[in-house]
Structures are given as C-alpha cells and as structure tokens.
Image (cartoon, one colour):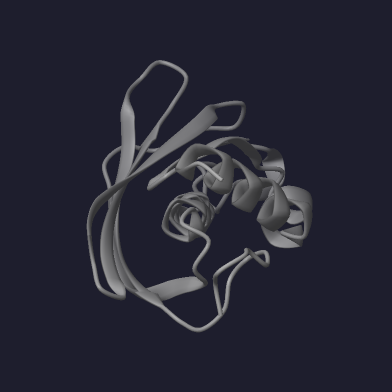
Length: 146
C-alpha cells in the first residue's frame, strides 16, 4: 500500500467514527495525505461567544482535529503530547474556516505539526502547533504491523 493510499484510508476510517468533529462541530475532512490534512467548518450561531464572534475553543478544536488526522496519517496511533494556539483575528457567523495541517518533523515516536486556520478570504485566523506522541496500535490492521 502506498503512503498516499494509507493516509487516505486512515482519514476515512477515523472520520467515519469521529462524532465530535463530524456531527457535533459540523467539520468536513477535505484531505488526508502523509503528514498532511485539511479540514473545514462553517461558523454557526452555536459557535458564537458573548462577543458574537467564534469562541476560541471551537477554532482550537478545528485545528486539533486537523492535527489528529495529519499525525495519524501514517497509520500509527498517535495522540497529542502538547499544543499551543495563537488567535490572530476573529471569525464571525457565516465564515468558512479552513485548517491546513503540515508535519514539520517526525523523529522516532514524536512529531511536530503546524496548523494554519484561514477564513474564506484567505486571512489567517489562528496558528496552532501540536507535538505528537505515537502510542501502540494502528488505525486499521495492516500486514506486517504488530
């Protein structure tokens, strides 16, 4: 199986059971490639805080979900070891937020990934950095893997 096929299969398998991202948040998985992922979400009234802008926790969740797909794309179960986010501009009701996630480095069981959240105008809303740690198991069984 090619790395591209593996990542695509991981994305489909994880998204099929990701109730939080898909059903609760209304996110879409646009792509899952080796070390890369792209997700999208429309800001709805339920995402707004007391200032009538998108609550930062929802923007964080979009970035964190994208991080999960990017770091699991190699079909090795991987979790967040730490992360940080910088909010650069507000998102408003009706905005379409897209998060692009990129693997910066993967060494042994640990990786660093950068997420960039933009609105429909291409303006950067937030930057997120995640540190990953591989744990035991795989997203789907694969020949030759324990």
